Image 1 (spheres, rainbow, N blue to C red):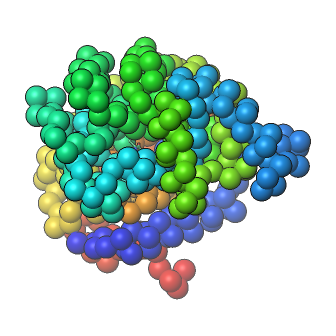
Image 2: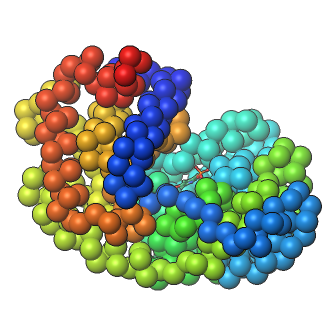
Length: 390
Ligand SMILES: *Cc1c(COP(=O)(O)O)cnc(C)c1O
């Protein structure tokens, strides 16, 4: 194995930041292509910046956040967090006790690690399903979680969404929707209703996924549940500070689904060309992807064996793509436990600066480069962790 622990994941991430730093210094921002779909941003005005104080800021931004948040997510009351992960933790701390059960339905595994980790922290039992027929509420179930769109952008089917809400409601169990990217993918690309309009009690979205906002969590829900969660959030320091609040407000004001719809059109062309070279490549709603398992299958098909795990191989691929083509994908910089799927998101702001042929060339050549080193531990480690002598 190449990546053996969360510490190794952190080292890999640090190395990627070194590479990005050197690309930015040598070539400038114009030749760095962040295609993660998570570029984030703070589109603030000078008057916003002048108000970034502990109390004056929230006094002004809180009411604007309520307006903007409800426009984006529906619901009665809005609460902002430092990250989506923080909002998930606060919700589970507020609504679930030791010995309770959390059940989680998602269109496709794997789930975001923050959900099982938070369940573990409060001592709740945790079950997850990706087949609706296995979904079953127990006597001690105190929270139902639905993932609207997974980390790999698999989208929930609207009928299944409604079914889970009605089963949970009939038993008076609150439904929390993790709509990190779904709040936009589901609604803009698939015309599904907002989670609150589907009957959810709480929803959270990540304001840097398919949106030019800070990496933060924006929650909406029924007022009395939000109040419970808000009190937990303050107790543990999970709530957003004024800079994040105003970053979220400006991102919502700026958001339009147009770029996502354009990406939806454009990705198919890239996919059609790439498919001829890389058999296992798949389409996502706004881009293309290769999961770690698919990468291994693709190598096998080309008679290349590797002793490394699928996750290792995907991370090497992402590092090569970054080093040689300046294209950033999530596995190069993912937090410990994050998905290792190579996803190229054409709704990313930087996608406007790369043409389809550059993406095709980068993926095809990176794959062949991967094939050359997939059996050499030293070479792979050098790509992942860099060389301290550099
Ligand atoms: C991204 C994501 C999260 C967590 O977002 P962070 O900003 O990393 O905290 C949670 N759930 C899903 C489904 C996600 O895609």
